[in-house]
Length: 230
Image (cartoon, rainbow, N blue to C red; front, side):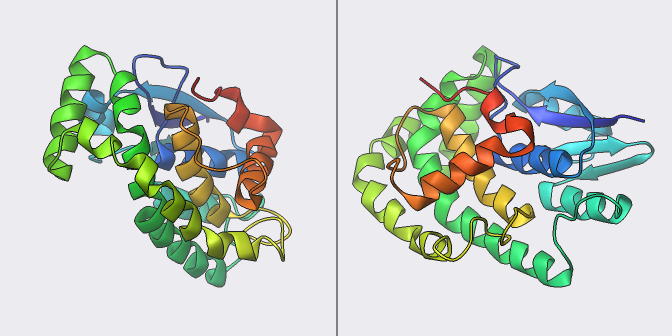
């Protein structure tokens, strides 16, 4: 039975942008599992699988419904142990939890400051109104005020990636010689920026940018199937 995968989109269903959905999408591809994508807009999320989650991704695999990208990855490793592992054991799960926290506290805030108005522009009228109200309430500022600070924050953001940059001098992926779910966590954050905004986060010569390019090529290049924002 094909897995159903609820994927966040804007008015263009061919440009899924959510970092968390990209994590789950890469996890499914890593496992070699086919999934039927269900394009889902912000205002449709409360109706997904009877309101099982306030966010996507959500998957349905037969009778099992799983929400949250990390929970989905754990489920896939448990349900399909004969397929390539996403964690390579309990240590890999613990490492991925650290990477998840680091990404959401280091990468996500800056990508938010870069891409908010672009993300708003990707929505249809009703979802754009929801997005503006929700994000401005959460951030306490107009979207345009948040984005106005992105140039000033760029150097600090690039510097904050130094631990990853340094690690990549030893190995090609966070997971070692090949990627694990920890790679997809960081990939999802940078893919979110790539799809939503043409703003250049990294120089091409940056080893983090080169790692990201390797990730775009994984699993038949599914990351490249959605073009970068122009």
